[in-house]
Length: 466
Image 1 (cartoon, rainbow, N blue to C red):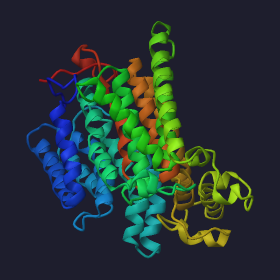
Image 2: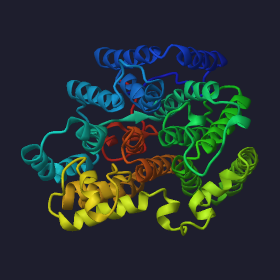
Image 3: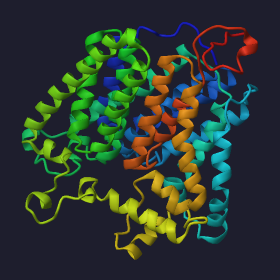
Image 4: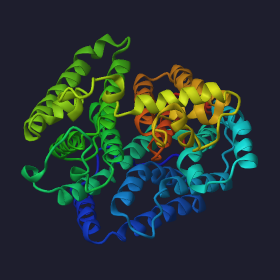
């Protein structure tokens, strides 16, 4: 899994120009996304055939951005759930190229075991709905399977940082696309709801998720002095523009998740590290001032609608037609989650089956709406097994982070776990972003060279190539 000569100084200006061109071409020729997915699959297969396993993980990290971009372009040859289908390909290739390393944890196998009863019930008793399974049931299964593989992975820090950098690249064509597709700002009537006009006509929630996740990764890379691009002004300009466009989606979940994860990252870096207190506090203040400035500009641009949106106001609450409640603030996600809990209480053993919770909501006075929160979906659709999976998803990160001996490794994993889990609270697993970032947070990354025989007992050493 080791790759020498990593690109520690960042990508070149040429890389940026190629990605910008890709975004421009995609705007007028949507079929280019088919070529991009084909190339990603070829890279994965080539990585396994040539024993360069890291290539598979490079492609894996890029898939969330490419998944959302494909949905934005609506190319007919690319399925809506291509991101999940791609992960199946990754899993098959990992099965072919098994690692013989010692497993560092068994969280993946435990998750799969806990879901067996509810999955068997759904297969045997319920009518099979392929769409429901792919949209709602597959994500957590893929997470469990991939955790069983990552427990045997051994990455060098160079590979890990390259994977993080590559995960951001698809956001550049996305930014180009939404910039071209967005009408003039003065022609947009900003309202107190998610805004598809600023996201190329596509669902703002998913665009916000990808923009926010990329924002977090760029911040991590800047703080750890491993910038995405060699030219500093490009990194900060990209950071600012991602945040600006993320705010204009008026979809708050992706932005909240990334900013909160950024502070988790800085707090973990600071924990017990008084020597670096000034440096990391400086970064926290720097990024806070940058974001406040951009938010102030964006709020003025939208006629102060952005501020009201983040305060949880709606047209009805401003007109006093409706009281501002937790449900209005969360855009009805609270009531959806509440009905999930009620469904669980009525079906506690094995739940109602993957994707079936939406068919029960009307019984509890809520419209027939798909799940938006993965944690409560696990309750309603998988019962007591889902409850146990929730505990694992929540507490496994603490177990894993405690085992990491290097502070920057702890901080990165903490941030990745946090953004993955928080995004699952507003977008469930409608994209593969939660799976990808959770898996990256669980990767064994080695920083120091010790005796090779110690490689199975410590998660801070770096294994050298044979």
